[in-house]
Image: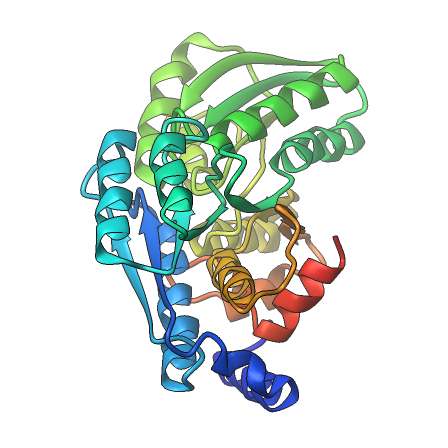
Length: 336
């Protein structure tokens, strides 16, 4: 993974290569509207935004790139936040949305006011907005593809859902359902809410373990794998294959188990640094570039072969990550 220094170096090179492109947006202001910061992924996402946009402001790429997070994960509160950003006169708003549809009214208001809106991770469906997203359905279905190779005879599965009402939760769940349909020897015997958080997932899994049969796997959404492992351990149950979500606690637990008994699994999620890609997409739009409404980025996966390197590069309490330079954003846009 690139260090921040390398990323900034690349950004500096890009500044020299593109010349006047940055000057066109030097007076522009961009705001981040975020609906939730209650887990390690969201905190890493905000950190990545602050690092990359902070350097962009220092370099004169944009005038400002303020970040705001609502106090509660409520679409009404985030809609009010966006309406306040409209009044403040931001040139672009980058949104991690509480709902794919509930913010559409506020987003349309922003567009009608001449403001560029780019949604990412939790995207919006309002046609005037741009979307930067991972194929979360593919990520969900990929969990079943992996488990089918590990367990050709199938078996029972426990599903841990994410934050209710978000596009990410819905799409990963749909992908898992499609994966089960493609591999019908597997059966979801229980579904619990994990909110992408270790403590919530641990409590939810512990609550259903007494009433469910043995499971060969746990399909997840990220931030919940270590909590699930702790719940199985506390209940004295055999630990199944738990799909992980690139959190440092998950990777460290996996490494410990692998070294002790050869434990194998697979880990994947969208890199928190996708916020920096969304920033550059907004900057490019403000610069007058023609950008497709949908920009898709690959999810970041960790396998047994890359576990050691991923764990080494992931800070304690953090998430395996990738932050984007402007060059990489331009390449990602051009690839679509």
